[in-house]
Image (cartoon, rainbow, N blue to C red; front, side):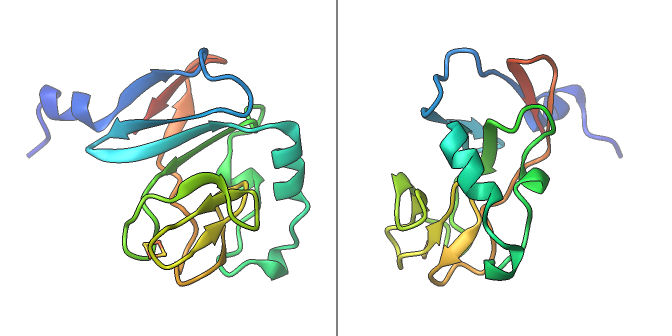
Length: 137
Ligand code: FES
């Protein structure tokens, strides 16, 4: 059995990034999950790219967590991979997100850097439809 049209419509959403200024984030909902959409600054991008993979608990390059040509955009499911709390942005030792639950800290690519979370914040499937329009799901 295939999902019907209404189910497929819920499975993906389009979101216009145009109003999000550099250095700002918004949280949107996709399939009932909160999703962070961050317009990263160049300093945040540079910081993420400079981290040696050997320093990472869940090694992933910055490139693998963003789309080529759109590296200023970081899109991630907002639930901490420890117990599901929503981390606070622009905080922690790594200038990314810090989780109020048990102190997990994520860097400017949403990668786990400290604390009990076992893995990076999850990047959902998404594609750019244009420079400012993204389809998630
Ligand atoms: S839910 Fe994030 S550290 Fe526990």
